Image (cartoon, helix red, strand yellow):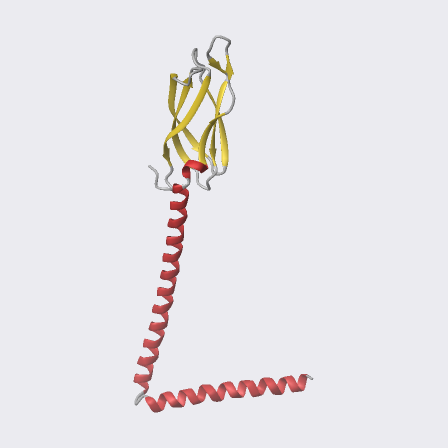
Length: 173
């Protein structure tokens, strides 16, 4: 068994050597001088390197396009993936909100450096009676941040909305 394997291996090696030798002989017959052969070989290797660098550049461009496409998709869906909601509050018997919380929800894979939002205190008819604005910082990716807001002497309902988003990774400055 081992002997037959060795014979097959030696035959394969012999065929490879003969093929290489034949190719070398053909090259020597085609080119008039050894310098021509060396020049052509060098140009061939340069061409291979150039093609390899172009393939890498194409791969990089494809990755860049894919990344840009992903960012555009996140920006387009930012309203559904980055939200602010009221997270509970108490109302006094004659009106007024206390012990109020809002929650900032970031369902993207990107950290938001800061967001600006407006929280409106509304009366029972839905009219705004007071408001508060402000920035909130460092909303981590795929997380929610609960924030306590100030009490108000007026209002029975809360409404919160994001007015501006700052995220360097998404180009939102």
